[in-house]
Image (cartoon, rainbow over all chains, first blue to last red; front, side, top):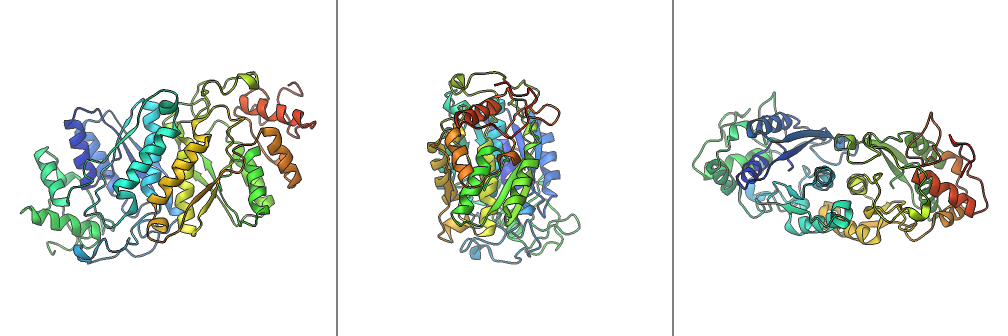
Length: 226
Length: 226
């Protein structure tokens, strides 16, 4: 499974474990602005007792083109209802395709056919590579790409169990599964080790906790403002 | 374009230039056994005067599963007609998918929609990710994956101009375009900086030069034996 260290992938980790899967988790140092998420991924993997956790380096900053992999500014203080109209500058070109491709490579060497990813298509900031039609096309491609499928007869399945869920539903699901969201990290633009509270990722997350009648366990650089 | 430094990608480079494309070339340090091919890629890119050449590190040795990315032995002295019956141990799990995904990421940031790859499905050693149906599925996925296609209306095209050519036809095409095959490197298992002459890649290459009535300009560790 792809494990970013964020709220969504932490929930998918708990969900896949609850379904009985043994977990091999893959994270990426893609020279992202919010590299702090990798510490969260390590905490989550350790807490869950996964079979293996790898952090693969793929320097997407060499290509840039995103506020997460260049000096472009991360948008702040956007109302959640204003997100998703256009694909924002935090979109990283082809990132999920690169990540899923590397997961496919590892899965094939492991003899695994189930690949989990924590995307969701509702509160999703408008990313094209978080949509069901994209994931279906990736899955179809994967089954034509590999020895394990073409010669071995296996069938790769891309699992995106959160794809049709709202962020608040994801939190409720995760809490029911015992996820400690204090271990996660979602912010695109950390300030001195704290979540900024103002980027799209922080705002979606905080509003979702509020919608659940809960307080996000994370500390925010801007205090408790919403 | 993907530029490995081998005979095929050198030919694709010349072909794309002859068709008027400006070239941005992408090579991979994937901790391959035959990392020497990267020197060839650099020579070819410099000779061609490309717009840009990047070497991206993606450590596929972390996953292994191939003779090219682990200590598994590279098969030697196989007759070309015996290749392609089974997918050999030199197959690197999902390698072309990882490579094309990274090329897609760079292409999107560049505003390019034409991605060239030097695969061929005839003298191809049986790799699943060198087949037309695979490339078509990748192209379809790519056009669902990116802002440039989904919002920008662009259409990514995966060009594989060598896919239906024999190695000997590729050499004749390249020579007509002025390719210096002395700059290329194909061997999977170099010995003291020389091509081994005995792996599938060396054998296919040497037999193809012979079929053209030519001598391969490369030096081989086993001398002139075929």
